[in-house]
Every structure is written in C-alpha cells, then in structure tokens.
Amino acid sequence: MLTKPQHFLVTFVLLKIFIVFSLIFIIHVLVCIMVTAIMWYLQVVHLPMLRFIGADRYELYYRELKMKNTLLFFPLFSLEIFTSVALLLSFTMVSDFNPDVQNQFFLIGFSLILLFILHLINFQMIRPLLSILHTDVDGKKHQRLIYMQWIRTLGWTLRLIILLSMIFTV
Image (cartoon, rainbow, N blue to C red):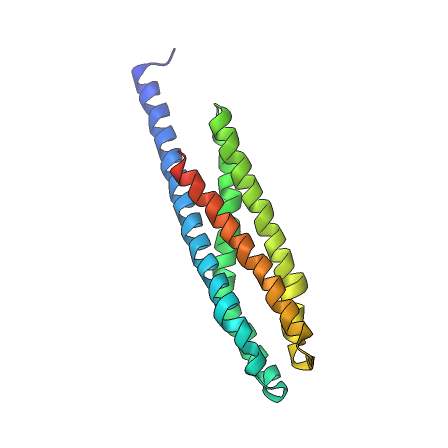
C-alpha cells in the first residue's frame, strides 16, 4: 500500500507522462497535417506543371528544387519520424495494456510502418524520376511520377485519417 506522499508522487509522474505524450501526439498530428497538405499541393499543382519546363532548363530547375525541398521537407520528415518513434516507445510506459491501448499501439505502429514505406517510395522512386525527367521525350516518366506521387499523397492522407481517428475515438 502506498502512503499518501508516495501516491501523490506516482500520480504526479503519471500526469507528467500523459502531458508529454499528449504534446508529442499533438506535434505529430500537426506535422502530418502540414505534410499531407504539401503532398496534395504537389499532386494537384506542382507536378502536373513540370511538363512546361523545357529540357534545356530542367537541370538548373531540379538543382534549385532539390535544395529548397530539402529545406522544407527535412525538418518536417525528421520531426514526423521522431514523434512516431517517441509515441510508439511511450507505450512501453503503460502498465495497463487494455484493448483500447492495444488499438492505439497498433494504429501508431501501422502509421510508422506506412511512414517508412512512403519514405522508401520517395527515395527509391520519386527522387530518381525527378532527376531524369529532363530526358522524358514522350511524357511517360512524367506520368509515372504523377502516379507515384498519388501513392504518397493517398498514403499521407491515410496516415492523417488514422491519427485523427485516434483523437475522435478516445
């Protein structure tokens, strides 16, 4: 049996863990909203317009694009990965692993796996296509790029739906 001061200390520590978990989750959801919005912008506006950049100017355009995209995406992607892992690890602090907690653990884990797959698509398919788009004479590489971007856009949209479902089902 815990004494009153011990009980207070345990309650205080649990409250601090809950607050930290909540802040990490809120940051994670906000970053996911930002990345999802950017993915939709890329899908609907940016990538379809790449066909209007001539092959003679595309290499310069791509260098600038790569640099600016890195400045935009690196902090967001890093924060998204960090908060995903932190959320998943936070479940190790839960003593009562009831069905609701198991469900949230599964959703965070699935979201992290989906995030990993989306980054693989980005680095293994999208980036190589962007780098050789200037050689696209018949438009097939551009169409493939748009198709691959749809996978990323829908993947991030699915992640956002999963995270929002966690908020509204609690």
